[in-house]
Image (tube, rainbow, N blue to C red; front, side, top):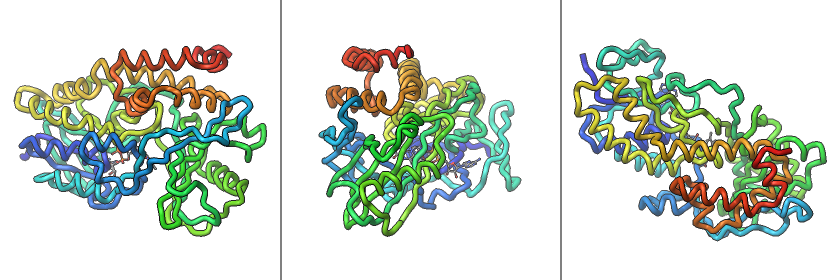
Length: 403
Ligand SMILES: Cc1cc2nc3c(=O)[nH]c(=O)nc-3n(C[C@H](O)[C@H](O)[C@H](O)COP(=O)(O)OP(=O)(O)OC[C@H]3O[C@@H](n4cnc5c(N)ncnc54)[C@H](O)[C@@H]3O)c2cc1C
């Protein structure tokens, strides 16, 4: 009977980022995935350019913008027609190049087109039963099957807030954003009536892709229950209509929905997660690709060391892996982000605009560090305290949950 060192579930960015690092470790590894790893990823992945630069991977960007702006106003009188300039490069990842680069690094890993149905833990290994009837055994199963993982155990949370967005890549009668511009958040809302303003806020995320093509996406940062695709589509079209912009051609529609506040998984379990299944999405922004790339090398290295000890069971290995993935420092930072998100979700549109306007007054190093989750815990506490002290009273009260 073959017992692999590692079996990976999934072939999305999380599975491939970790597999690419594990492949360097001289282990016996297989991957199973519902979708072939060679099938093109559908999501549009954006990232701050510096996150790839620091890893020497910035050649994987298909687009890069230096003119990066948002529109917030002051949330009181000014409705935000003056842009907040970010002076920081943002990029879109070339999915195909990224996927191929990772697959090239997955040397020696065999991928099977299978879907895991059940995982059981025997004495020293785990058994994965697939829907086809195929059974595979491995000392450690790594579940990178995404946010809806059926195998990673975590505390129950009734109200899972979701980031939802509806986007169009296409041609428009008039450019929806300036030439060479990237808009992180356009909170201008003069197309909405008062009632709509009081309901869950959403903003426009948009960019010039060149050759007369633009990507525009109406985005709800986090909301329970999630805003529907239909609702976001209507909001997007009204936003465009209000500026006299008509959609002329659609090349791609993006339907985005994923959880923002999934509780951290239990550390004592027999399966290890990575990516969406491991609650690795940044709870304040929804970004994850940078974290996957930064956190995969250490995890792979540590797992290879743990696997050398033949006495470890699947549960021992997975538990040790969870401690590497979510050490004290990152767990505490996650709690702070979760608290912040919880408060933001209670904000109406005007408070939200005021909050973000104030947030981007932090130094670039501070807000980038916050959004990429790269600030050490004491620094994160400092930055969050600074933000609080500098906030207008209504934001302070909101952060303290005082109505
Ligand atoms: C539309 C959209 C846009 C996003 N944009 C960004 C962005 O711009 N920047 C960013 O950083 N993040 C973004 N995210 C958030 C996050 O990075 C993505 O959700 C990311 O795809 C999650 O990666 P993952 O590998 O964990 O899961 P997924 O990409 O969902 O991959 C899961 C894989 O597991 C397989 N699978 C599922 N179940 C099983 C099973 N039982 N057995 C075997 N295989 C299985 C699937 O076929 C798939 O291959 C976006 C998310 C969405 C939905």
